[in-house]
Length: 373
Image (cartoon, rainbow, N blue to C red):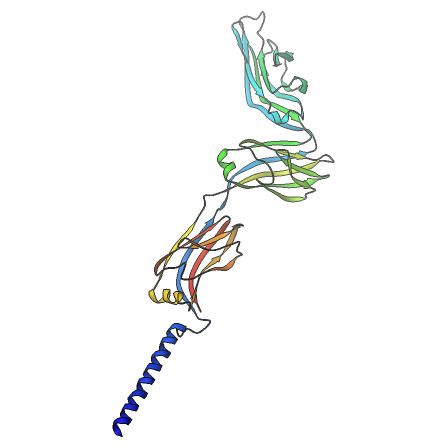
């Protein structure tokens, strides 16, 4: 009987052992002892800047002016000119004066102003425009103002200023000393300002900001290359922004036009800032997954996330996160923490590479890699 009982005990113990093995095997396949809601930080990494950054390439001072009245554009300016002539010849001046094409439809004429500081009046002072005499006289000391009508103003012109010889006083020289010589184009009533952009600026152009202090009546309209960028009745500090999508821009000359057809607007301290996109920045970081951590992903017991903290948005766009070349997600994030999930199919045991790119511009100072159940 004792032998039979021993055999039964052995069979019983064997059955228990087999049952325990089955239970352990089932448990191993069902999952580890990882409570739900648990998180493990795999890596904390420094961030950087993703995308394109804005920078003010340059600022153009446009000055102060009034819109809705006669405007002037400087064509020539000299602090002093000395003209002389004797029996051997004349020491005169001849200048080629070009008038830009964008003034053609609104030009009124050119005005030459100067002050005769000193002269012996032995001969005449002569001013010619395109070969036509507009002034010839024994000029006294004082201010002179010579206006040349628009009908005589072409795209390319010649201005001549000289003194005639002393005549019978063959031993002497005629002398005229002129101060504050200014040749201005008069046009209007709109204000026209040209600014230049080079090809590299066009290809990297993001936006432009036109700032000024405004005071006046009527409706102010601002055009860029003939396309309206602003129309309204601004008061005080004002700013107008336009992008490449708003107005056409050219490599070379671009034309700003300020118009007020109902009154007069005073514009003070106008400045144009050009913003360009810097070279694209990419965040590249690396982290390590241990055999245990990869096993948790592979068996589906935990899932992975690449979390990134957006500190500031310089320019809206899409942020794309890749893990080992696999796209985890692409979105236009807000400030704060954002995440992109991954599993064993995107990750690998050992070293893993994170790449964060953007079509906008995002400051991302912190990156975390976590596993969570």
